[in-house]
Image (cartoon, rainbow, N blue to C red; front, side):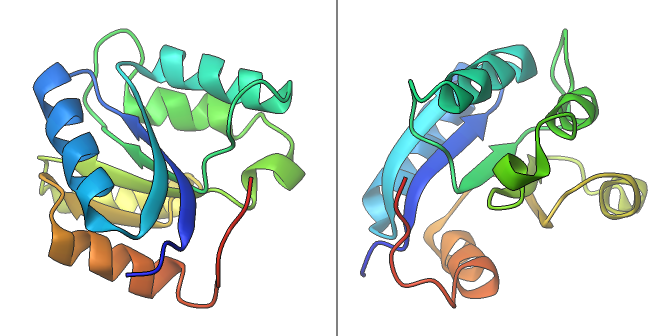
Length: 142
């Protein structure tokens, strides 16, 4: 499969989940670069470094909802404070074990979320993400 997403940012406090998701994304073939962070705060720091041209800008963020210190909702509030020119090209997908319809509704109604999928990541889920959110893109650069 031709790579269509340059950089994916995984945000999950669980090391095992991050390890598994990173492995699946790397093996998929549709993604060039995968970065994992273990908190919303760490992800925000990463994005600030992108703004300072020190890190690769993610095209896609897989964001866990339930994390200590800063949960996914709190991350989204801070994410919205970045310049729109910066955030408009980043797809944010909530990745959670929660199947609560209220979480889905909250994500759609109140935050810049492009999708909501349940853990764990898999090739079929990644294929859906590419088809639904990156089908019109040939190859994305930094």
